[in-house]
Length: 187
Length: 187
DNA sequence: TGTACATCAGTGAACGCGCGTTCACTGATGTAC
DNA sequence: TGTACATCAGTGAACGCGCGTTCACTGATGTAC
Image: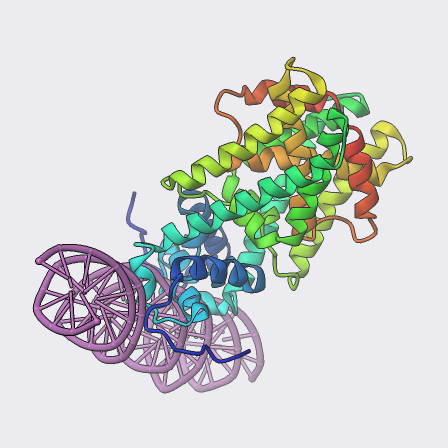
């Protein structure tokens, strides 16, 4: 925990630092603790400083969600890349999906569990990219026939499981890893 | 909208009125608007009055969630009662599940979408009752073999679909009723 | 290379807001006798 | 049936809190010449 050497008046990358701070606060203290002022504190600037980068609190939130989607997208791609066959890729994506949600529960909930502000173009784009990723995988595995229906069903399953796991609603006696394995194998 | 006739000093059933007010606020203005003071306002009492019935704001929240679970339980029972065969009962429960969530999105999210305070005995009981209801239906339909796994899978599917629908994450072109029908028919 | 100056990105004080909670109080209710 | 009184369930003022946002400001940076 070194003291910042020059104690710069200008931060350098406050925008990025605020997003990073926001995600850390989110994971550590939950959505209720995610405020502009808290992000500013964590980034080591005065609470009025963020104004120059995010006009309103909702803008920062949207941006945090958007970067969450990007990481999420990457995680699913990484999962799929480990497999050869299209069906195996889809199943791997399902596992990666739940793994991501469990690793970043608060960000995941922000991404999927709230009415998100539809204003941010960046967020809109990141969201639709995630959906396209899933439908593509489904189509590759099972063909275009009823692809939408199958994609919705697949998504519902992993999303529901992830949410229940995150919110501690699954029975404590359940072997979650085995349950996930079984469920994805039937995708 | 009659004026309350006697303008009683004592409310009569403030406790019940606060729970009712809380649910209405929840559905109308969302979870962020659900405060002790707002409930008191809606119930027509001073903002300090609830203190006598709910020592803390979390207690009121827990009670609202608990009554939500009770209604939910009832809705699933009603759905199942329309069918004869065990498998058909389970499918009907799935449909009722999603219907309830769509009809009461904010209450549903409060019930399933948050870390709920585990202190309230009433809430704890209502939650485990809902889970038992589902596992019973699964066992009745498919026998005790792998019942837990099957129950989790079923629950994940309907919960995920309900959440995505509530949060407007499903593709706008999707025929939700048909999708739900197809999904439940494969339970 | 040096200087003037516009622009950018911070600071810190102040604003009003609604919140939960506490407190002394008071009106209404119910019970003992 | 009446009365005294304890208890209950309200009131309304006050508290401190953290929040988002605004504002005049100032230090740092970059560009024109």
